[in-house]
Amino acid sequence: MKIRRVGAYGICRDEAGRVLLARNSALSSFPGLWTLPGGGVEQGEHPDDAVVREFGEETGLSVRVDALRTVTADVFRLPTGELEHTDRAIYDVSVTGGALVFETDGTTELVEWVPDDRLNELPLMPFTAAVLGLPATESDKPHADEELLRPRRVQRFGAYAAATGPDGRLLLTRIAPGYPGAGRWHLPGGGTDHGETPEAALARELVEETSQHGRVTGLLGMSHRHDPAAFGPEGVPIDWHVIRVLFRVSIDLPTEPVVTEEAGGSTAEAGWFTLAEAGRLDLTELAATAVARVEAEQAR
Image 1: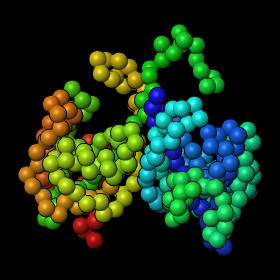
Image 2: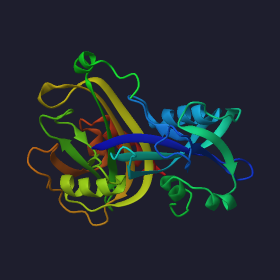
Image 3: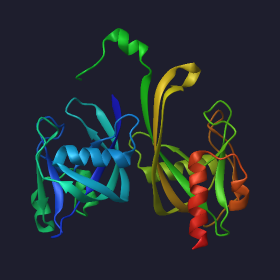
Image 4: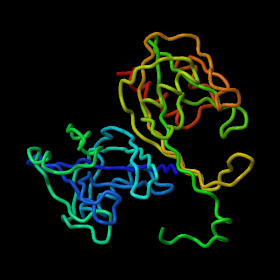
């Protein structure tokens, strides 16, 4: 069985440059390994809020988000034999208050400020080792009848591009009939597949939706949308939560956009637009955000 989850984690350093790490407890799937403080994003929760909440639960410290450091993804085989794909948002955070305490009855059991020269001595979660530049070393379940009545929860992680060519025009896609937001102009991108990194998913989606090859030049941030009363295929109710990472992308050799994904896909057409032209289109919230960010960038 394949499982997907989204997590948010924080890199926090003290005045001496030590990084704060937490050790997984026996309740974790990987007991004894050290990890960045953080954890799963709850249904309907923004990752920015999740990292603050999880950091407080695991360390006792209040933190603020300074920057989104990176996004990554990995797949582990759980002790149960299931394959778990986790999309991870990694933030730089700073302490604003609180006192260092250990989590009780949680998935971590110890927190410690660790100097860089000691990191190699600790067994680290692979994603923690990677982001630090080191080599990788069913409760409250509703009854059956309640489960049937409750909309199925779907949490989706997607990667999208604010993509421009050498002339500054923005690449947009139009949502196909039958999909939420049909007819509106959106950003190229989409959901990541199981085992796929956000950058790999973005490259694939760019080709499928626009036939363009892009180069990631920056990370603009994350957003989310929660619709607990959405309808999925064939009118089935779902509790829908999409979490999106927005990349800045350059298309060095732009061509005429062509939709190459299979018939019945979510993209009806794609095109290049000046920022003035894009501002007159019926844009999705994410596309409008990208237009504003590119306008600010070009105004500098």
